[in-house]
Length: 193
Length: 193
Image (tube, rainbow over all chains, first blue to last red; front, side, top):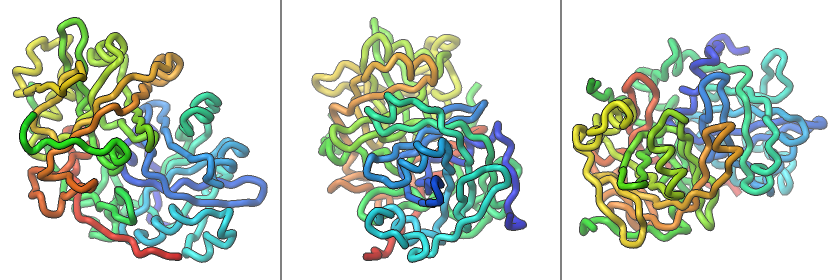
């Protein structure tokens, strides 16, 4: 792995998603890799950490997840704005060269057979917890996080460091029509006992 | 309702949650009102709009949702930072005067018997879609959005207007330990055809 990438303690993996970023979902099956964008991903539990993600029936990545039982959620950043929008709006079904065309570089995590997207800020390797009713009725997939990593230039000591990391590292929060918001300033609530 | 509050077209209600804000969850049953904070809420479908929210078994609001079959997700803002943290860290079980103590003011939406929290930026009135397995196994609740409203000072014409609304209107995105991020600047992806 790239020298800036470090493991994140599983008990703190929820923090990678807690602020609601748009994610990239990647998966591999039968020699096919794919990556899509998903705004509808969410933490579901602390320990063991679990996540939810909505994968439309039209998404080619969905079949890769169903068939392999594995996926990766990764947190992209402002430097990847156009890449995130492109992989979110182009299907592998229509555009078999999609990943190369949009400059998506993949790398591997030891012992986990799904591709990770280079240049992101954080990665959560997930094992699908099959829930056929949720998948069929709601397009809702549940995963257990079995490995987590982050780029220490933007997440270290169990916390995001957006304040100090520079604008290219801000997480992306999709609305519609190609418009995103970057995450903004840190605010500390006063404790009330 | 307050004159700045306007209905949001149900087909665009997902946009109120799409950027992953921490929400307030409110519910009413048997003469009891409660409000809690939840970072784990997410859009689930466009039309009819649906949402997911994780409600821990220890949360008093959970029983109100289960017993009434209704809840409201509302999007609070930076002006409510301390209120959001306070209702998220104090339980009605230990602190029966919680809402008054933290300055939570409630109001009503015609025809929907659950309390709405004043001063928020947006509100989604939801009918619980009972899914006992999800609720028991994962603390995961699914709702259909049956009404949506927003404060036109920060959401109008189907879009958030954070850029022009001033810092007090920024949505809140919780991490841990009382630390939140406010939503930040708008970024427009270049379309790739």
